[in-house]
Length: 193
Image (cartoon, rainbow, N blue to C red; front, side, top):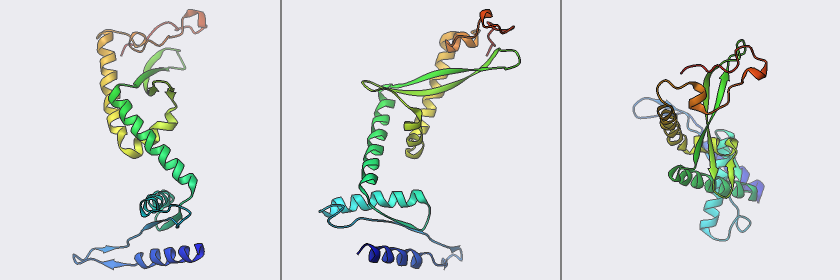
């Protein structure tokens, strides 16, 4: 039965992927992705089967156009984890769980701090810091990256204003700049921002 379903999906994709001319004269080549779930392996109600097929369709989309994908349990787990993480991140933004860490940019020739990179971090109560590789791609794919970006700009501006207009990079970032004991001839001097 699986081969027959795969053949039907391939046939459907091929029938959609034809050249069409629209009424306004514009030409198009539609493509589609199909998610497949099977009864009873992937659910015993239409709601479960639809949810499984939807998960498989998103996997097919992630692989490229004109594809089909069968639902597997690992897809379901990753989809649930993805949705949970996005929900927790959305709540984390609202609850103020994001942090900015500043990483100094050092001139290799002089050893002077010449700037700083603001790095967003997410600290979940009870779980600690969430690795950026776990939440940044999800923020990008869900659109939450816009809210995070706006927060980073606001927070970096507040940090700068709290430190004062004449503050050095060292004071704004609260990041230690190497002192004379480091052996760097210009160490201990912070660049003005």
